[in-house]
Length: 394
Ligand SMILES: *Cc1c(COP(=O)(O)O)cnc(C)c1O
Image 1 (tube, rainbow, N blue to C red):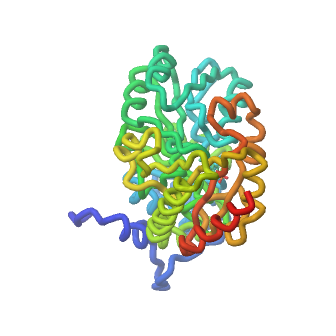
Image 2 (cartoon, helix red, strand yellow):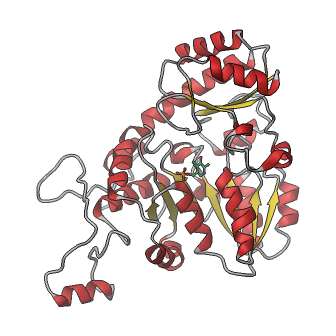
Image 3 (spheres, helix red, strand yellow):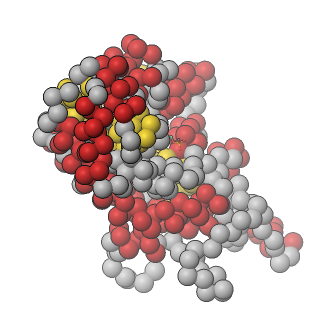
């Protein structure tokens, strides 16, 4: 490496990790190939013996995917990355590669639905003990991490209530218990929060969300130290095959080029909408990290550089009011995806968080009046007008 100054995120989003072939293409090439060829049998043998770097099979590596992985490393400030077929494949692989029977996991209760299922249902099937804590309660973390623990999983801000976990404090407690910390950073994106800087060991993403950002493909990513990826993650990844399609990797690579602009504009829109909702008498709560009314506003501002693209709010009239609002929207559509250029709203209690049950929803504060709004790239004034007209029928 030459001693070039480190580049800024906006530049990395466009250029980092680029591999240009002898065709001199400007836009990154899509290597839609499952296998690779060798000059001779000796080269194949050397590749499999790890004596030379040579792609062997797209389940292990692919040049288009390698560009995406290198670009994500540059943005995250991580040494190594592997991309996966979905965000859940990333979370599942990051957990299962590191755990064995008899291990103990401590997780924040406020997790994405399928992450919650892996910890509460799948891991115990393999004899891995799982404990949930209230992510915002440092005393609860300290108690749970008073015993030897293998892994901590958390999400901050959380889906859908935008609860914060104190990354620095929890990483210290976890490390003292012998645990590695895996952070699901989907809501913040690497542009607004970099968990490795607060002590996290592994960061996972659903690239389906802001990285593609245009609702087209699924993908995921796992980022960590080179040592952890090479020694712990790669054997599991290579042999179990949660690999991303090179086509999807290419779409996401192109998505990253505009992610900075999208996330900045969508976050500005989300803040404007959260302020508008806060002033409406039909809304009992409007949750957004940069609002002073957010219960963990100061922590959010200490570890995030922006509030993100998601707003959660509660209709005073409960589920009936929430459904009326959703059904009255004309621009914002009903969808459980998020991070898209199109604004999407969902009712978590009857969709994404239906299966965790009423009791767990109660613990998480997901009442029947809560709506999660993923703010898109439309003009925020049109979105506020859309909400205003829909609120009139509530
Ligand atoms: C969407 C999402 C996932 C799962 O990602 P998929 O790409 O849908 O598999 C995991 N965690 C969070 C916070 C998410 O929003």
